[in-house]
Length: 163
Image (cartoon, rainbow, N blue to C red; front, side):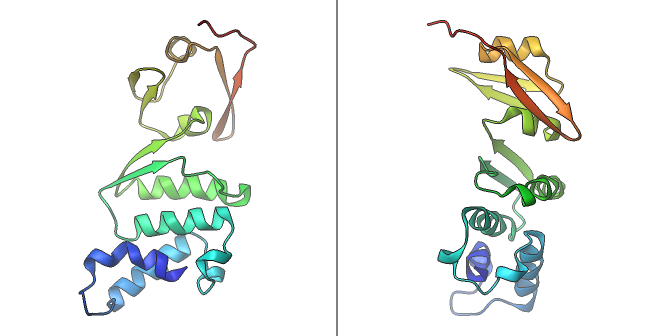
């Protein structure tokens, strides 16, 4: 598992050299951020889907990229880690731009700066203050966003799709 995260620094390592102590420190910090300390010696094939997702995110962030593109990053992430996961994305976003692809607009809505929805065409909305009318118009489905705490949920009203 540690080697997978370290592979995110491959472009910084000399071809015949080893990772420096600075690299090792960045790997350690990333393992800690991903809450993977107790799994650092476990083979990658023995990890659960959620643990693997955290390792892969760790590999992506260990190099401190300017841009991080995440496609459904919370897939397989266990519920215990999910709130920490969104806090972590907020921390990462302080130093890296993040493009996040998700079908779960309700969960990410409270955490994003701008929204682009794809539903047969691209609809861009600057800011995250999205009205119900805008959602209805862009998704062609009536969607209610219900919020409690920091994680809103979506509820689809009973409706028929128009062909």
